[in-house]
Image (cartoon, rainbow, N blue to C red; front, side):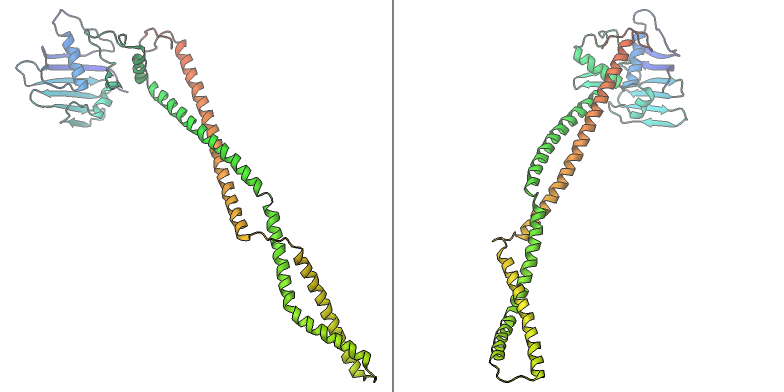
Length: 354
């Protein structure tokens, strides 16, 4: 942090030809009227804010110059040429020298940082210079409306950053609450949609059973022609046995037994076919559309993923509310501490309650 001024030198500014003095932490300048007291303050102010124009250059001289030195080794020299611009020379504590020209009305950020003096823009039409106050000006901020004075104090103490942050948090919270309501509405709609698909697994299982039965029927139908032929042959064989007049040979009997067993197996297969046919007839008249069910299932999965995203947003909104509450509590605590102070610890001036 820059220490207080330790040396001031002013050359050829208004009525001051060459003035040099070493101010302390508190310096009072006294003298007769028109002795140049105000010119000293104007010269320091001109150096801090890069005063434009050449009206304050001492008559008959081509330039004015103000040197400001601080206790931490910071050296600032401002030179204003009558028919030209201004120049800054800056030397910091490590001895590094910098020069700034072609400035217009601007003050280089490096010089501002070294001087720790800057004009504060409270509004587009309202600027303040807290470090300087001339005798022609009204008491600092006392002639301003309460709203402007409050904004100026907030700018000076950086409280405007906190206020802006609170406004942003409130905006974010309002947006988060709106998103939360939309999320809740979507969740309600999703729950209603989910109720429609509660029996989806049962429908899929029914379709799988139906496919198995249909495949069995198709296989049985393929065997039908063969079984019918075998059955007719079995009937004819029974008729031949009844009408036989001669006792068949052992080989003929064995052949007949084998043929009979084959026919019995075919009859059993026929009965199995009839059972499968009856099962098919017992099926519902319409079988669910498998591609449509699969599409509904995929859409359900997407809805569940969206539900998870909205739930996360809901949790984040709760976190934002908690952060805002903590910020409001901290602001109240700061206000309470301020109100406990009766005087400023730096300058000793009485403080107004907030």
